Amino acid sequence: MGVVDRWNEARSRIDRAARESGRDPKTVTLVCVTKTFPSDAIVPLLEAGQRVFGENRVQEAKEKWPDLKARYPGVELHLLGPLQSNKVKEAIETFDVIQSLDREKIARALSVELAKSNKPMRFLVQVNTGAEPQKSGVLVEEADAFIALCRDELGLPVQGLMCVPPVDEQASPHFALLSTIAARNGLSVLSMGMSADFEQAVELGATHVRVGSAIMGERD
Ligand SMILES: *Cc1c(COP(=O)(O)O)cnc(C)c1O
Image (tube, rainbow, N blue to C red):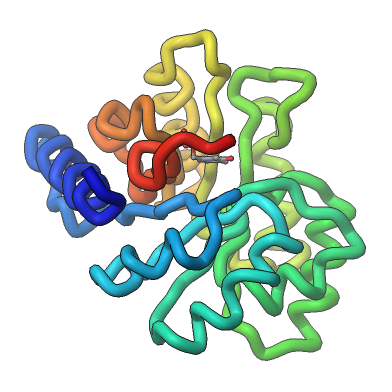
């Protein structure tokens, strides 16, 4: 199977999971995660009509995407990996959505840079639902205050939440927890579910699933 066949299959599985849980498949956005893959591997998906993509690193995205965006109008690029303060400006130039907002210092820098540019950006706050020390994201108990800081004090357009559950645990409780935090903060976007568990995520309300290897193939 080629990349476009795997993309079609992932989309069918998302649609089926949505219908089975009484949801309109159109309410679930497939974010195709293309980190580590060269432009040549991405072009077939753009030709097939995929427009929403995710990358983990500002530098890598900056090398690949300006050219692809120029060739394929309507691309929406999401940053999924951690952002450093010295990359904030480039991140705003390169990405349309930052899903990994989790530090006050970065949030403040983003709000300063955003005020200078006219770029319409959207943000998700990443929540470390498993409280893993090595993992990005705000802790569950800090989430409400951090969302309030970003949205109300800094004026960042925060639309929702993102999480990456611990690899060695059932993902469902983490998805359910993320959904609870979003609901009590009036946030409508839930980015959850990756190659191994995106159908479960759709059943638990994901509006965005981030699928890499199931479409692109294994990464090195
Ligand atoms: C790499 C990555 C993905 C995609 O993972 P797959 O298991 O390859 O689908 C999704 N989200 C984040 C934050 C990632 O870093």
